[in-house]
Image 1 (tube, helix red, strand yellow):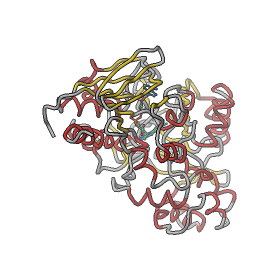
Image 2 (cartoon, rainbow, N blue to C red):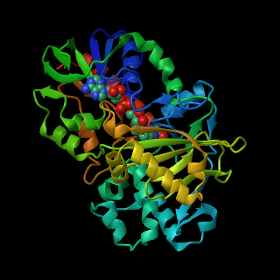
Image 3 (cartoon, protein in one colour):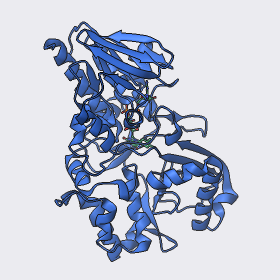
Image 4 (spheres, helix red, strand yellow):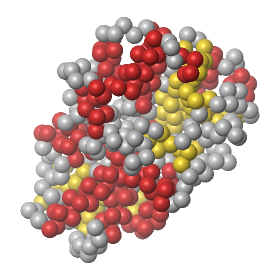
Length: 428
Ligand SMILES: Cc1cc2nc3c(=O)[nH]c(=O)nc-3n(C[C@H](O)[C@H](O)[C@H](O)COP(=O)(O)OP(=O)(O)OC[C@H]3O[C@@H](n4cnc5c(N)ncnc54)[C@H](O)[C@@H]3O)c2cc1C
């Protein structure tokens, strides 16, 4: 859709959704300004160069599925996409066991059945933890089930079984996960960014949005006022939940329910550990079911050239617990856990670490949205424009099952661009 639309649009937030929306709107001929509260673009995409010779991904790291716009962007740029992320290992009964050896274990057969086919659930809404309790899951499997919830950015007790099944049924991107080879998530989006770089105002922490029939006014924390014909809000759901942005007139009841009810925890941690030498099995990609972290994985897994970095992934209640302890004690607990799994090798071989607590990031305040009880039908309400003036993008507004992902965020940019285009053809 290329056109020569006239009008100006403010996009709030320079994450994946915000920069892609700005890029698409600019292509349509709109004048665009992006207001970004922090001092960098990317939001929950954060490829960090200061830890190792290769960048580490502090936020998004895996390409989920191949029938996605993000996967296609990588193909179009000629970037190799790695399918081999290493083998799954489990921490089970105080031992590290590779998944192949557990193939005939009835508890694991049940776990994989739940993991792969939960979308077949057709019952009433019930918390996932309560649902699982009705199956008498053995205590030593519970952390493994918790890792399933961590993939959704939370804990079992906060997911709704019916909402989870409905949302999972919408997922059509494919089941495989991939990694980008020799490049980063930030680099992949850098072309988009370079096209709109001069439109970004950094340090513009939006606090007030009001609209009238003639347009929209946006005011930042430092009392600067910006006016436009339309505004796109692409801030994380936690920011909307916090109430830090004041709307005038106030948001409608359904929108407020959606903001309250769709899940997004104020927590989410990735911690990276660099060792002088790897001490885990060469083919290990993931170590699932730990107690302090939800899982550990090998950063930059390569079957030929073994990486020396492990990433701890911690979400939901576990992340809240570690965040309360803080970085120093959190790192100590994670290393103690790794020591208990690898006979003390980790603390002997540790050379450096990096801690990223997304809950403490003032402009993100969490990890990503998830299907809490009775939330499946609310994403459309979250996404619905207000009087053809205020439009909503960002991963949490994706109602096609692709929430919580980079490609899901990008898809919402396409949706708002169409909505804004339409709104100019048919103004209220
Ligand atoms: C730890 C972690 C791991 C993840 N792993 C993956 C993965 O492997 N694969 C995957 O596909 N996805 C993953 N995700 C999810 C993915 O990163 C997000 O879904 C996606 O990046 C969200 O993009 P967005 O544009 O919706 O929001 P964001 O990237 O959060 O962008 C929102 C922007 O709004 C800005 N903002 C906030 N408040 C204001 C304000 N008041 N005024 C102005 N600006 C404001 C923020 O600073 C931010 O830049 C992960 C996320 C996290 C946190």
